[in-house]
Image (tube, rainbow, N blue to C red):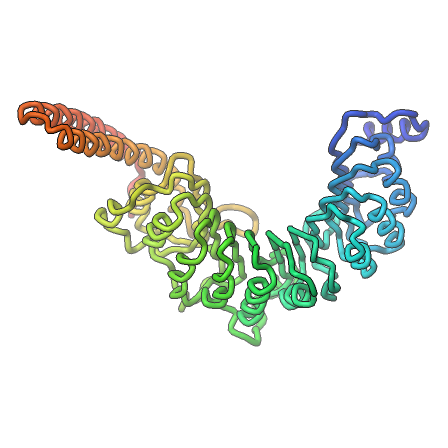
Length: 468
C-alpha cells in the first residue's frame, strides 16, 4: 500500500494533463484509520467528465480540505452518485461541500455523514432536479455506521422530490421529518435505523406516519444499530415494555403496494394474532422479515411452522422470509399436500433464534417438501459472527436439506405424471384395457422410483448422525 501511495503522490505532484483512467465510470476511495493515506486532492488524477459514481470514506485522523470540494464540480460535472463518509460531520468544509452539491446538477443519489442545516435549502430550491435518493448516516473511522449526530428533523420541502430515503435517526425524529413535509411525498422506499431501543408506541407512531404520508411506498425497513452505545446497555432497566406487537404495525397494512417489509428490534415480537391481517394486505409481497433474531423472554410467542404454508398460499412468489418459529408442531402430510406449489422462488429463509433441538430430521423433512432447490437457511449468529451453539441443530438440517428437497421434487414429478395421465385417460375415453396398461406401467415406474428412494434413504440414514 505504501508503494502505491508513493506512486500516486508522484503522479499527482506532476499533474498529468489527461486523466489516468479516461474510461473510468466508478471510483471508490476508502481511507482507513490503520492504513497510511494521502490527501483527497490526489484523486484529481482520476477525475474526468465521464466519471459517474464517486464513493469516499475518510478517517477522522485526516483533515478534509475545502479545496477538494471546490474543484469537484469542474472535474466531474456529470456525477450521478456521490457518497461521502466522514466521522467529523461538516467541520471546516460544510460551505464548500454545499457549493459542491449545487454544482453537480445531475446527482441522483447522495449519501452523507450528517444533514447540514443549509442542505434543506438546496433540496427545496430544486437545484438537484434529478435527486431521488438521499441517505443520511453517521459513520465511524471504519466507514461503518456509528452513533448518529442527527438531532433535528428535516425541514419542510426537503423530501418532496425524493423516491428513496435512508436515515440513521430516532423513530420520533423520522416521523416528524415526514409529517412536516407540506406536499405529497413520492417516496417508494424508506429505511430508518435507530440508535436506541424504540418503544412500541414510537414504532406504531412511525408506522402510522409512513402510512399516512407515503401512500405509494413499496419498501419499508425499520431497524436499529446494534453497535450503538445505548443498544449495548440492554441490562439497564427500561421505562417501558420493550416488546413490539404485530398490532403495532397495523397502520402499514393500508399500504397495499409494499413488496419489501423488514422489522428488526432488539426484543422479539409479541401478540402475533394480527399476522392474518397482514396476509390480506400486501398482494405483491416479495420479502417479509419479522424480527427473527430478537431477544426472547419467558412469555415470548412463536409462529408455528404452518406460518410458512400460509405464506406460500398467499405469496407463492415470495423471495425472502424471516420468522422465529416453534418447531415442535410439524404440519401434517395432509396439510402439506393442500399446498398448490412449493415456495419456488424463495432464496433465503431466516429462522433467526428458532430452536430445532430434538426435531432436526422432522423439520428438515417438512422444509424439504415446501422449499425449492438453492434456498439458503440463515440462523442466528453470536456477536462475534459465529453460529450460535444453541442452534447447532441447524447444521444437521442444512446438511441433509438439499437431498430432501430433491426427493420431494422427484415425488411431485411422479405424482404429476400420474395425475396428468389419469386426466388424459378419462378425457380421451380410452378403452379399459389401455387404461389398465397405462396404470400398470406408471405403477411400475412408481415402484421403481420408490425402490430407488428407499435405497437413497438407507444410504442417507447411514450417513446421518444419531439424534439424542
